[in-house]
Length: 463
Image (cartoon, rainbow, N blue to C red):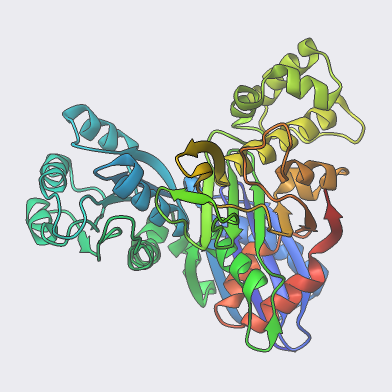
């Protein structure tokens, strides 16, 4: 047997997955509370004891890790036009596995600079202007940032004409220059910036989060957890040499504080008489909704869905829903008992979280009329033809009504503008292995893909 240990240092739990490479099978999974406040090795050791109880003593050939501890990788972006370079910067950050704590457009003010200082970002991404275009804004913003303490690295990925001058203005900061995220109008080039974000994460951020304490046990600390999940989704969708994928897919991860959505599809217009508006979308796209979650962000679900909808889905009165939401705010570690009112509310919260997060992620279509007749305008990805839906997160994988919750990701005739999938087969990550398989895919893609195909519970098509 040749075994590999895969570790996900999460904000709440440290999750371990043991894999037998030769059998292409899981040996076991285990989780324990992450102990980043004291010594992260304590949580790792506790999870390892639980895993060893399942597997017995194992001599691991390698040990790989990803991390989202202490809030994950917090980034701030500053661009020129919100819909253009600002959006390009946001897409680059999210695709690299970051949590975008702030997005600024146009010229930074003194108040903006103070807000950025108070955020304590892990990285700031400074963009603006196409190559050969506007330089005034990015230079102004570099000068404004230079007034702050140099406590965070800055990636300059804007107008190449101004890049070196920005670097000089930011003397004292750790500065990295990357190719422009939008070198020409409407053209994205975000991969080099994403690579740089991950490199900084590996070299600096993980050290700051305390993971270096566990480094003696690890072969490699490789990436932020969302990057690992995105890699797993790309592999599951597209396949690899010697093993086919399952095709275009949409994935939803509902957590306690945020809801992440991933789509692996080109999302191009399906109709002949459709005009595309806005920046082209990445083939592999990630978004994160920081205001939507099952516990810390339950209020955000209420704000998005409304009290009547939560009552209708849960079958509870407004008074009971309000009382339970208050209880959740005070006790974010509540776990519902089977058949309880809290379980019914969690069903409603999870359903609404999935629906709202996917609605924001997917594109939208509006109808207009021109001299040529009826025309449709598409913004964002058209996911109507995506036929595979992957769901993960404690509220879904441990729920008794997972398929019903997942179905809220699909097209709703009551919201015809939203370009969500019309029907999809549902794959459930019951053993919480997606981040582990993303890690494994960096070295053993074929094995990772085959394990996902075996372990993800498939529930057929839902309309």
